[in-house]
Length: 321
Image: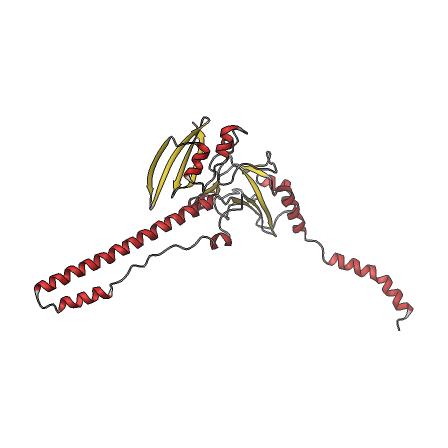
């Protein structure tokens, strides 16, 4: 049976125990700060002041360093992966992540190409396998050695040459088909890269300072690289466009807005011409194994230069006529 004294002690100590438990498991400060940054930025838009590589590695920015960005490394990333965002382009902030004691990620237009899901959907490079000497060729080769007359030997040699030539033609067709498939894969991959956005990685070598993990701190760190002043919650500029924001937002209504704003990589020639009308010029060129169709269109005083591979729009540029 519990004594009255023990019961009284438990009643007195209960609030202390509850208070101790509450201070033993505080809410992580970095989680609170990440939530504040997400609320401040996700779904808003910014205008980039620098070209950004088409990769999930994005741009590494060290605000505390004398040279915050290694531009040579950025040039290599753009050379290897293409350019997803260009100077003056407006893009949505799709995700903000705080990596404890490391960096703040501001993901733009999808965050960049190169995640596990991207690689799983890429498919593999096709490597053709040449057929080796056939059984029939070996039989003919052996028969030539034992031919009884010069005429018979000549006939066998002619047949062997024909069999070898056919095998070589089949191997050549297989290599050409593999080359074409790989070229189409590379074109699709290039298009996916430039449409997947990029990101800023705001890094600190000695942990993220408290004043840096705030909306004002993020804006301060990115002041030279992005403009937050025109941020809105409803972006209309498509990510992956090669045109500047000024060209895309030149008009809010009318034929130009309907045509230009409907452009995006991956459209067919027919879909592009439904938006822009017939091409004013058309030409073809070879770029490695690819046949690139280049067409230009004029609409409302602006010229659109477009490149197609296998009838698919892979790149375009909007400029004054």
